[in-house]
Length: 218
Image 1 (cartoon, rainbow, N blue to C red):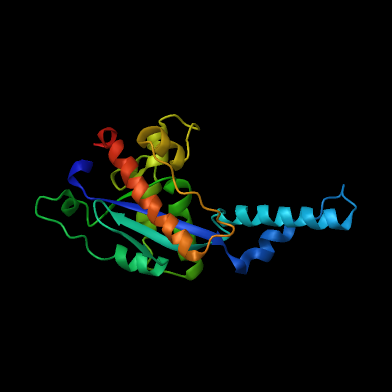
Image 2 (image 1 turned 30 degrees about the vertical axis):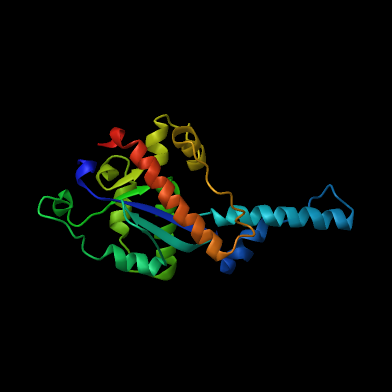
């Protein structure tokens, strides 16, 4: 499939620990046995709790979605709830008579960064939790297929690396190939609005990186 004839959609989701599941995740949180001083025990527990929350925010079973970001190539980014995304996804793709999307049963070409291992998985699991029967599970599973998903999903992290296990972060690739850096964010203290700004920035940066490497994908 020729990407230069198909409009692409950047996709990104932001997550945080699911408070409803915190007790389950913290089952293994125990005070260090080699510390006896109560104040040091308290400090150690607070440090471990902070680490657990960071881990929980990126655990595909234990997190919840703050927002789903979508950016149609060369258009303004949109931030949605998961429910809004599903409704958007089921909206028929508008295409001209010569647009290749006419010949893909309404599929959109999704561009992610680490979507195969995170974003797509998180969205499917969140939909399962919410009992969303109309979530496009079949499409998402197909997008994750190493061989069959190429026509409908491009994971920039995997494709740019080209060498298994040698992936770099989005920020590193932006610095190396575009000379720009992501705006730092502390997810532990960031507000929902700040996270949404971060999501928008990730969509814009993903598109820049995609366009930089587009000769590899067409």
